[in-house]
Image (cartoon, rainbow over all chains, first blue to last red; front, top):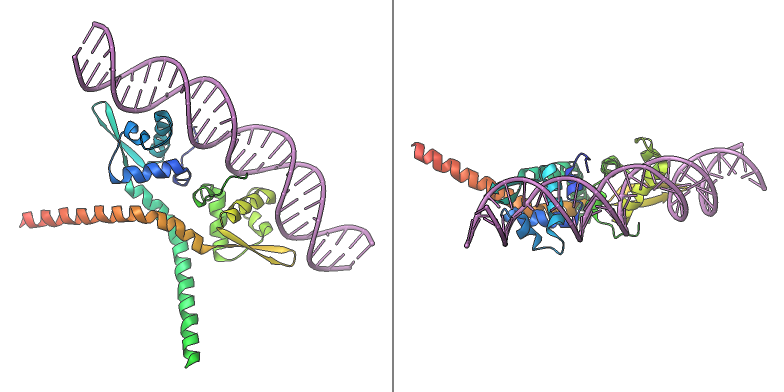
Length: 108
Length: 108
DNA sequence: CCATTGTGCAAACATGTGGTTGCAAATATA
DNA sequence: TATATTTGCAACCACATGTTTGCACAATGG
C-alpha cells in the first residue's frame, strides 16, 4: 500500500482505465462514478486514491462533494514513453516504402 | 497464471518495460537479456512468457537459441487507446489558443 | 557417447492487489 | 440540535504477482 505509485501500474487495472475514460469528459464524484460499475463505492474510492497518488487525477472539493478530474497532461507521459517505439515503427514503415519503391522500379 | 493476458498489465512491470525497450532494437536470447538485469534468467524467462502471451513479443528459434523480438505493431494498441485522450488535450490546447487570441484582440 | 549449454516448466515463498465490511469525520438539512 | 448524506480510512480476505530454486529436455561439441 505504501508502494511508490507509477502511472503504468495505475492504468494496468481495467476498472481504473474505465474511470479515467469516464472522468476525462467531465469531473465526477465518487458516488456518481461508482454507479457506473459493479463494485462498492469504497472500491472506487481506493482506485481514485491510487490514481491521485500518481497524479493522474486531481480533486476539487465543492461543499461535501468531491469532484475528481482527469489530469490530462499526465497522460502525455505514456505518450512520451511510446515515442521511442513510434520512431521504430516509423522507420520500419519507411523501409517498407523503400522496398515497395524498389519493386516498382524493377517492374519497369 | 492462467489469467487472460492484457497489454496494459504487461507493461505495468518496470522490468518488462525495460525488456521491451531492450529488444525493440534487435532480437535477443533470454540469457543475453538476463545479463542486463539484476535477476535470474528464470525470472526473465517468465517475463518473456507473459509478453509472449499477450503477443507483444515473438520467438524465433535458431539452433538451441531462441531469439525474442518485439512485435512493434502490438505497441500501437496503446497508442490507439491514447487517441481518445489525445483528442481532449488537443481540444484544450485549441481552447487555450482561442483564449489567447481573445486576449490579444482585447489588448488592441 | 558424454558433458556442456540454452532453455522452459513446476513448486514454494513473500509480498502486492482488489475487493468487502465497518466505522469515523465533515457537511447539509430538518 | 438531531439526522441524513458524502466521503475517506483501516482491517481483513482471497487471489495474483515476481522471485528463487530445482529439475527436465533438446541441441551442440569434444
